Image (tube, rainbow, N blue to C red; front, side):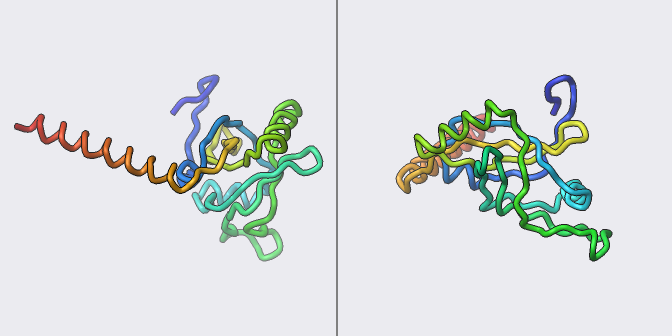
Length: 159
């Protein structure tokens, strides 16, 4: 998939659970400050976004509970902590806008997907509101109905 400026982006990790648990109102693209062994692990696809979240701390956005497995070829001393907090790189005005939304209206910052844009790892952050149980049930019912309609249309075309 080609991104802006003709650069290709390949999704490495997706947080499907986030779209199930939250309404995503806005999304932001952020860079991540990583070590060498972390970037090599991510390129190998050894990352898990499930259960992760982001917070604004002292005017900086930090990503918590993202599990990046230790890189096998790194030595014992050069490897990284799998779930350490990682700094996200955003513009100052984006951070202040996010901070206002999170403080005033009770939004949460949730990572949606991690991908490469050129050589750099990027993460899509969603400004999210939590879903209630009945909202989740409505989504499941709508998805099932859509699947049934598609199945009926497909079998109708075969006759």
